[in-house]
Image (tube, rainbow, N blue to C red; front, side, top):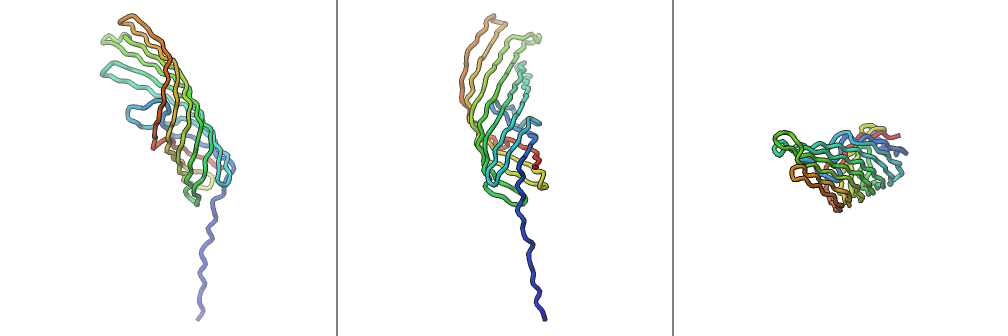
Length: 201
C-alpha cells in the first residue's frame, strides 16, 4: 500500500505593475458640504507610480454642486477644482486586497454664488465667493483586484484645509453692497472620501 503525497498549490504574489491610472467615480468635496452628505459622481482622474511598498500619486478633481432651497427662494452653486499630490505606503498585500495609508498635499480653487429671490422672483440678495484652499489629506484606502490589471479602490479621508478668499454681498432691497476678505480652517472626516476604478500596467 503506497501513501500519496498531497502538495498545495504555490501561492504567487500579485505582480506589482509600474503604473496605475484611475477614474474617480465619486468623491466628497473638500471646501463645502452637501445637503445630504452624499458624494458627487464622475469627478476626476489620477495616476500612481508604484514600487514595492511605496507609491507616488497625483490626481485632479472638478466638482460642481447646485443647492436649491425652495422654502426660502434661495439657489446657489459651488465649484471646486482640486489638485492632489502625495505618497502612499502599502500595509498589506495579497492576491485580492491591498491596504494602504497615504498623505497628500492639496490645492483647491473655489467659487460659490447664491441668489435669494422674493415672491415675484426678483433677486433681493446676491452673494459670491472666490478663493483658494490649501492643506493636507491623511487617509487609508482599500484596493480590490478584479484582475491583475483592474481594481476598485475606496478611500477614507481626513481633510485639513486652510481656506482664504474674497466675499461679495449685494443687497438690492436695502441698496447696499459689501466686500471683505475671509479666512477659515476646516477639518473634515469623509468615510466615503473617494471611489475609483483603476487600470494597472
